Length: 80
Image (cartoon, rainbow, N blue to C red):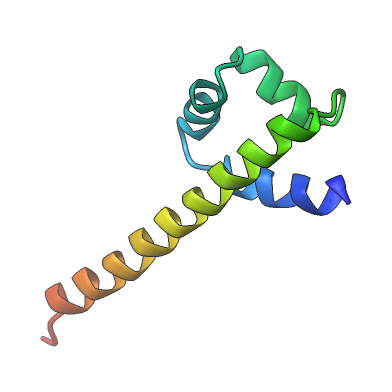
């Protein structure tokens, strides 16, 4: 079960600075986030639930950024 969530977590933490954001959100050292991502440690239930909330928000933000970028690109593209 944690494997599926770990894949989501890895995807959500790809953007630069996102691992640091997650560590600050959870109030844990950055190294702990790296430990979870590598699979060398598994977070407790409460932390996992908080991580899930963060991942859902990160996915929404990434989706908004992609949709916003598409509309901006379309507006600036012109035929020559």
